[in-house]
Image (cartoon, rainbow, N blue to C red; front, side, top):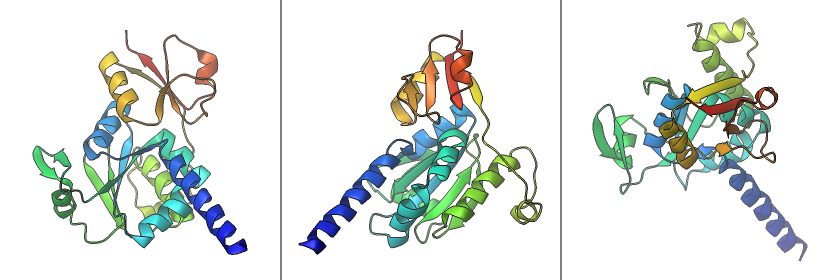
Length: 220
C-alpha cells in the first residue's frame, strides 16, 4: 500500500512539473523562430525524443528550475521538437519535415540544443544533458554575447554578472495576434499572471511596466 501511494505521489509531481512547462515551451520550430523575430529574443531549440532518458532528466531537473524559467520566459524563446515525419518546417527557404530537420542540423543524439539569434541564424549547438547551473551560465552568456562578442571561457573566467532586463515592446496588431496564438507565455494582461509572463496591455501603464519584465503594446 505504501509503495503504491509513493508511486502515485511521484506521478502526480511529474504531471505537475511537465504541465508547468506548457506555460512557456513552444512545440513548433517555425513558430519559435517567428516569435524570436517579433520579440527580438534569441531562440533555443531542444531536439528531443519521447523515449530519451536524458531529455526527460533535463526537463525534470533543469527546465523545471524556477531561475531557469525566469530567464527563458523573459530573455529567450524555448522550443522542444521531435523527429515527426508528419510535421513540416521551413528554414533558410527550404521546407522539410521534422525528421529531415534533425538531419539538416546534424542531430545524432538527443537532447541536442541549437541556439539561434532573433534573425533565425544558428549561433551554436550543445549536445547532451546540461545541469541547471551550467545551463543558467549559458543563458547569461548568450544574453551578454548579444552586445559583447567574447568566448564562453572568457565569460566564465571574468565571472561577469548578467541580469534580466525589463522590456517594453511596441508591436503591430498582426504580430501581437501571432504571439497570443503561438507563444504560451504571451497573455492579455490579468492580475493573476506572474511577473515573468509577457503581458499585452491596451493602454500605457508605467506601474505594470515596473512590475512585469516584458510588456507589449500595440504600435499606433
